[in-house]
Length: 128
Length: 121
Image (cartoon, chains in turn purple, brown):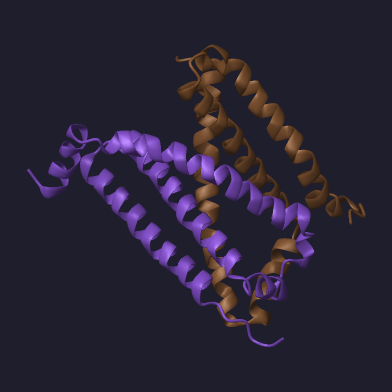
């Protein structure tokens, strides 16, 4: 039995899917406020025509908004990737392809999360 | 053929909207990362979101997906944690749909109004 197969077979014996179930709901409740808040701020409270470099620079002068965006990024990514993991599990039946699809998903998630977090944490505006 | 009615459709819409929003999250990380290249580059990117009509419609679709996923998520929580929730799952599906459409009215006005020549601000 390959390592990948053993990893899949171990699943039902652990509480992993139970925690995944709870995680969807806990992160979902938080995202309800953070994601809808983000949409409200960017589309209703602010005319979107005003969302530009200067707007982001002013916003990111305050650590609060960097924290808000970082928490939103981490929650949305983990919630979304967990959902995608289950969708792949449902529709990609052959084991090799399923392991491959999951690997692509997790790699992309890691790369994009690091990129997003780097931008949020390190952005320094230039004088305009 | 399985005809699960409201329960099936709510599940299909939840998956489709979830995939759509995750896809946009990846795109959104890239467009935001372009801010590192300075004001000219970033403002050129945001101008695409503001000025291209197709992007206005895509943003409207995105917000529709976020709203439906949020409200149907509340429906799922009610089914799971409210003992009587499952008895009202059908009504709550229509409730989630109604709230989505209701919340889309102001969004549509601000986002799509200018496309149809309205002065919205």
